[in-house]
Image 1 (cartoon, one colour):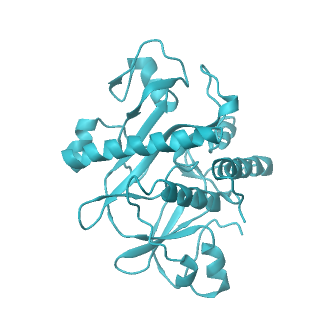
Image 2 (cartoon, rainbow, N blue to C red):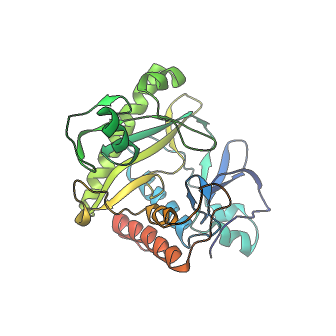
Image 3 (tube, one colour):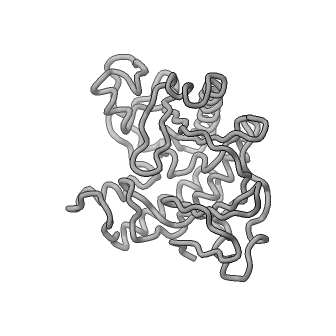
Length: 295
C-alpha cells in the first residue's frame, strides 16, 4: 500500500515530521512510521512516492544491524504489528515501522563528507574550505577528499539546518560528547563507505543523529545511511568534475527546478513518470546495497 499519512488509532500520535509519524508506546518506547511522503526544498510534496517508506525503513534496519558493533542504536526488536489493532493498522506499519527507545536527542546533526559536493562544494569555491576546514587547493567538484571530514549542523525544526563549527558543537553538547560524536561518526562513515564500495555504490556524504541514554551513553537514532540522509552515487557513473547522478530525491529537485515555482507551499504535483522513476531509484539503492528486493 502507498501511505501518505498514517492513521494509527490504537496509539497516540506524538509527532509528525516531513516523512515520519511518531506514536507513543509507553514511557520508555515509541513507534516511528516511515511514510511515502517526500519533501523538496523543505516543502512536503502532495504526491507520495510508492515504496519509499519501506525502502528507507529496510535500509535503516540493514545499517543498524551491520554497524551495531560501532555504537548502540535505539532499536528494541519489538514487532510493530503486535502493538496495533486490526488489519488496516497492521498494513500501515508492515515493513515501514520500528519500535525504538525514547532517548534524549542531541541538538546537532553529525554530518560526514567524503567527497566535495553540494553545499560543501559551494563553500569551497568561495573560501577554499568546507565549514571552516581548510582543504587542498584546486580540488574539483565531486572529488574525493584526502580524508573524511566532520561538519556538524544544528537541527532546525523548519527550514535548512545551519552548519556550525566543532567548537560550537562542543559548547552545545560538551567536549567529551562532542569528541566521541565526531570519532564515532567518522568511523560509521568509513565502515559504511568501504562496504558500499563493494556493492558499486559511493557514499559521498551522510548525516547521523544521536541521543543519550540514562547512563549518558551515545546511541545512534532516527534513520541511518538511507537515500534521504545520504548521497549515494553509482560508482560506474562517477566522474570527477561533474555532479554524478544519485539515488536520492535529486531527480525530483531537478524536475522542480524546471518549473515556475517559488519553493514555498503549496508544492506542485508531480507527473506520473517522475513519481515512477523516483520510486525505482529508491528501490534500486536498496537492492544494490543489500542484495534484497522489497517483499
